[in-house]
Amino acid sequence: MDFIRTRIMQDMASGRYGGRLHTRFPPEPNGYLHLGHAKSICLNFGVASEFGGLCNLRFDDTNPAKEETEYVDAIREDVRWLGGQWDDRQFHASDYFAHFYACAEKLITLGKAYVDDLSADQIREYRGTLTEPGRESPWRNRSVEENLDLFRRMRAGEFADGERVLRAKIDMAAPNLVMRDPTLYRIRHAAHHRTGTDWCIYPMYDYAHCLSDSLEGITHSLCTLEFVNNRELYDWILDTLDLYHPQQIEFARLNVTHTVLSKRKLIQLVSEGHVSGWDDPRLPTLSGLRRRGVPPEALHQFCRRIGLARADSVVEYALLEFCIREYLNAHAPRVMAVLDPLKVVIENYPEGQMEEFDMPYHPEDPAYGSRTVPFARELYIERDDFRLDPPKKYHRLSPGAEVRLRYAYLVTCREAVTDASGRVTELRCVYDPESRGGQSPDGRKVKGTIHWVSAAHALPADIRLYGQLFAAENPSASQNFLDCLNPASLTLASGLLEPALASLEPGKCVQFERLGYFCKDKDSSAERAVFNRTVTLRDTWAKMEKNAGGQ
RNA sequence: UGGGAUGUAGCCAAGUGGUAAGGCAACGGGUUUUGGCUCCGUCAUACGAAGGUUCGACCCCUUCCAUCCCAGCCA
Image 1: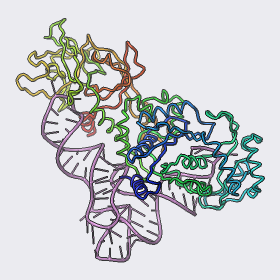
Image 2 (image 1 turned 90 degrees about the horizontal axis):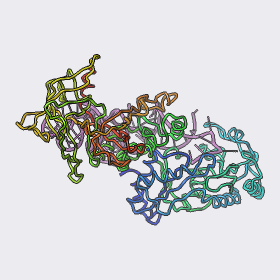
Image 3 (image 1 turned 180 degrees about the vertical axis):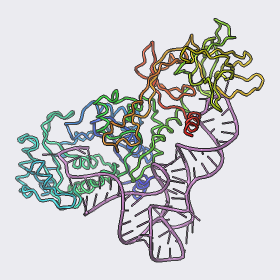
Image 4 (image 1 turned 135 degrees about the horizontal axis):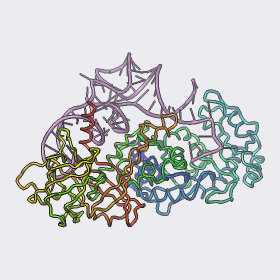
């Protein structure tokens, strides 16, 4: 049990909020959601359902310059995909602009806020530094009447952008810089994606967030660690206004190796064309992960396993891969596909003959049913499943060696045909007719089993093989994170699929046996399917070879 | 340098005075018609460091060290 759930249980037991639990997921609609947001979604919606509470979806749209409706729609889709249920509780900070304004007038009346004529640069100068206290603005002690008048005129549009701001009157010598008369409102003559030109003054995050939480009756306002300093202001505003007061609790944000989870960097990757879009399967965006074939359940497991604490941490990408494999192993139908084809001719199999094998879609779960797969004299196998000069412990095909063609027959390689350059172009094999289904008729041991497709029946397909977007473990540590971009993050292959795959719907995930999990992409056409590799299978053999090569 | 937060294995993370959970990774082995899955085993004399309190300290106290956050009219 993590510290937040522990605390929620205590609060519910003590009746602190009348035994209620109400959280919120408050994204700013200025970009797409990513893995870091998944952690927050799983937390906020998760605790709500675990403890019989509610979780609101709230768009923190207080900055008209950055926010767009496109992002609102994308965020809704992503949250829904992850199972977040907000029912009729989709809110927007912009819904509360009138309330925020009224609270601001009250703060002024209380003598706790003032209109400042200082420029942005001057405000910065007056703020002081980490070690020196700030100085009070010359406009700090205006009368309530003058402040009210000025603020109303700000709202009426009488001033230009940047001309004045509304500030809280707290303490310019506060050791916490957030408390040195923070800005509450700024003037922005800009159209807001929801309120249009109704307003030309917009509230700041610190001001809007606590008031939104309070208005919605939030009990536990969960946010990331960089807001620890802001909690003092959160509390100050609510206390000063004497309003219902939720509890802000901070947790460490998620970091994952080999990727970036900063909105700024993600926007840059998309806008500069380093990736194909927000849903590029190499991106850690939820839409990218979805397109890659990552099931939402895998993300839930991931969020459960990464834990929740207050220490900065970087989770290894391998853990995400583990969670993806874990779910897909149990839920993805098995099929056969060859990504790097090598032709095989079964010399003793009659020309023109064809037979069909019934193969289960899932070896451990009969409920997945089966399909038939055609077998004929000419096949394709994976080029990597043959070696002219096999290393020790190589269980696959090589001259004279026998392997099992998955669910079909045992075959022995008689000859490898090579071209002038020495490249193997074709394998001449013989099969054992007694081994139908892949049985060993006399109990002889055949260690290797390889996948295959019938040359005459195979479906061509484009396969996108994705690797890490960044070669470096921590791209953000580099001077320019773009320098860490992995040039091999995407490689294209022309594969051959077993015919049953013709009817697979886009968005569905399957396991290409012995290769990995693949998701049919929306770019697929009737003539040619496109598959994205979600994740490879664990490959113990590749690891053995690599370790042996290192010696 | 002021304030705040955090240090437990390669990576996460429990433990909150009674003698270091769990997961990932790694390594070894069994099983296997996926070199997949699965199963079994190994993996911190040690909790940032040094002192102190205590019968007993990861836990309490003191000092120190390291890392992260804050000087937007961003969130």
